[in-house]
Amino acid sequence: MTEQELQQLIQGGESSKVQFKERLPHPDSFAHELIAFANSAGGKIIIGVNDKTGELNGLSFDEIQLTNQQIVNIASQKVYPPVFITSETISVNNQQILIINIEEGLSKPYKDSNGTIYLKNGSDKRKVTSNDEIARLLGSKSLLADETEIYETSKNDVAVWLFADYFKKEFGMSYEEKGLTEEQALIAKKVIRNNHLTLAGLLFFAFEPQKYRPAFTVKTVTFIGNDIGSNNYRSKPEDLTGIIPELFKQGMQYLKSSIRYLQNGQGFNSHGIPEVSIIALEEVLQNALIHRDYFKNAPVRLLIFDNRIEIISPGKLPNSLTVEEIKYGNPVIRNNQIAMFASRTLPYSGLGSGIRRALNGQPDMEFINDIAGDQFIVKFPRKPEV
Image 1: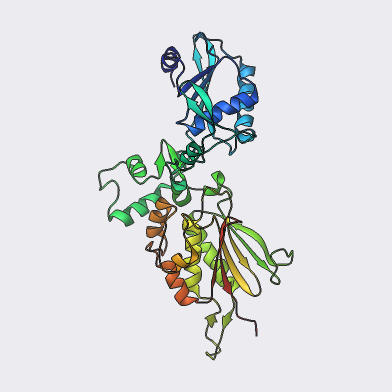
Image 2: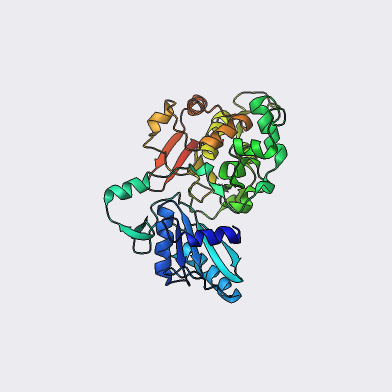
C-alpha cells in the first residue's frame, strides 16, 4: 500500500472493512476484532489513527516491534482456530502507521476462549447468538482446502519444469504455444493465486512442499507384533517428503519392500506372488494422498504389523459418504484441484473406480470410517509366515 492509498483509506473513515486504533487495545478486545473480520469478509485494522477524529498518532520503532509481536500472539493464542494475518508499516507525514490485514477465514466460525462468535456490523461488531447464523457461517467456506493460498510462498517456489511438463501433458502443447506467459499459465491452472502458491500448487510443483507444510508427509513404521502401542520396531518411524507424485512413489517402494512374496508352487527363481495385492495398495495409497482432509495438519500413515497393513488418511469420509457407497464407486471429490493434477501425474483415473479395482485385487481388505478419530483406515490382512 502506498502513502497516498493509506491517506485515502483514512479519509474514508471506518467501515465494515476498515477499523482504526490509536494503540493496541486489551488483547481480549483485539481478539474480538480479529474474529469479527475473519467471520465476515476480512479487512484492515490501522494502528496509529484516532478512531474518533482520524488524526494520526504514529508509532515509534519499539512500539511497532512490540505491537507486531503482541498481535501475532493474540491471533494464534486467543482466536480459535487461529487466524492468519499480515502486517505492513507505512510512513505518512513522517509518522509510522501499522496496518494489519485479516483475510476472510476458511474455518468459520472463529471464536474466543469463551466460545463467543463475533461478526462485523458496519464499522462495529456484534455477538452471534442465532443458531441459523452459526449454521450459515459453517456453510460459507468459499474455497476448498487445496485452493487456499500458502501465504509464505511466492512464484519463486515453483519448480517451473514440473509445471511445464504437466501443462504439456494436459493440453498437448506448451503454455507458450498456447499463447500464455508462465505466470498466466500458473494462474489459469490455480497453481498460484495473488502471487502465492495454492496448496495444490505447493503439493505438486514446489521445490520443498514440507518447508511450508511440514505435516503433509507420509509417515512409515514397521512394528514387531500387532500392537500399535508397541515400541518394538522392525523399522523405526520415518517421514517421506516431497511432492505428491514423489510421496506416492516412495510410499509404494516402502510397501513393496515390506511385504512377503509367496512361492505358491512357482519355480525357485521366480519373484513370488505378493501376499497383498499391489494394485490394491496403489489405489488406496493414491486415495489417501488425493482425497485426505487437507484442513487437518497431519500426515498419511503407513503402518506394517505382523498380521496386517494399515493405510490411514486424515479426515473421515466427506459429506455423509459411507463405506458401502465408496465400494460401489460413488465418488465425492474433496480436493478438486489435487485430483486434476493427479490425473496427469499418477496412475489415477478419478472416476470412482479405484476402490472397485482395489477390491477386485484384495476382496478381504477392511474399510473403517473412524468418525470419532476423524480419519479413514484401510486394513490389509497379511498371509501367515510359513
